[in-house]
Image (cartoon, rainbow, N blue to C red):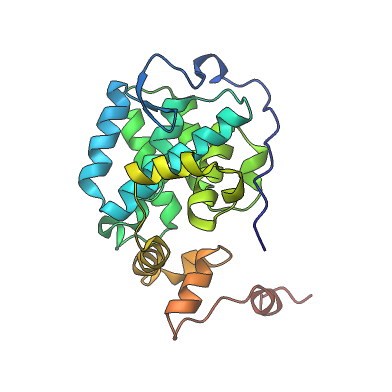
Length: 240
């Protein structure tokens, strides 16, 4: 069955970052892929260099595709969004899958979110924008909820869902898809991203409980035992 496109997120209430959001033609962008501008501010370039030098080809190209798919989703729906913030969130969203965090005991989404927050805060980005980036990354694998939140949060989830799960694939024009994949190819992506998840979560399987990544451990780790919500509830210290 062909997955349905992501729902259009509702317009969020006014917030402190609203006046800082740019449209898709922000003056900090000049490079385009498939007609989609890539942020080219000093902050965006520094983030690109950092991720390019600390991740492999799999995660780098995946992260850029997530931005491109998310930004296109927003453009198609005429949503105002901060392109620079969405770009940084996309670059950092998979950082927790890298070897650097193989000692981490928290969810991999939090690893990337925390790193993005630190990166932005040390460069003087206001707390409201920093927190929005953190939220987008922390929630990007959570079904449905991001699409009821701020555009940047919803669009990161939409870009991730399209690149990883194919949600919205049929709405993507072939020429757009081809141009994006020419710039950021995905050879063997399905196989390699599953291995990346397994490698990142094998030492902290408890953090995958209740997430889509629990399915990865169930498939690739024959010894994995899923935490059972019902069993935990029934075995709790409450008498009733």
